[in-house]
Length: 170
Image 1 (cartoon, rainbow, N blue to C red):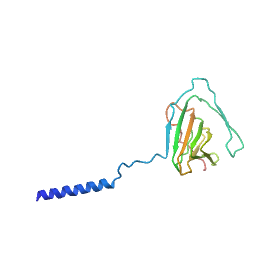
Image 2 (spheres, one colour):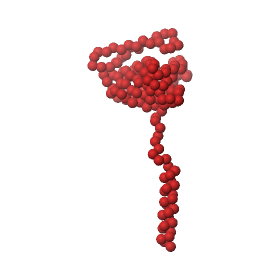
Image 3 (cartoon, helix red, strand yellow):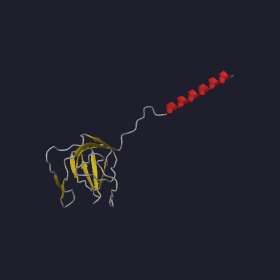
């Protein structure tokens, strides 16, 4: 009798284990993060004396903006992959950023005017950084890939500032 109970118990246990294993996903992997940042270069400094000045006028505005870089020699280049529908939190950067849209489309929104500016693949734009608050999102059902060159980056720490950022009335 003990032997029969033992065999039945082992059989029930085996069925439970096999049922549980067949219900669990085998080799299931998480999808990619909504926004992934891959540094393509180390944080680098120019060996030469470099001054950097940007003058640009956003589409739909009447006045130009001028950015005189305080310390352009601390740079880093990053590849940023933005999944369909993903949105950056409201943020700023320590210094100016040149963004090239390598693939897909990015919609850029400044907190100062709340205008949605679309940048398709093959275009570029300047983000002035230094407290200039903005967000951006991928409005498409395809992956968007950006290549961004950051200037005035700190020796360590994040490239974006989100703490204490106020998004305005957008």
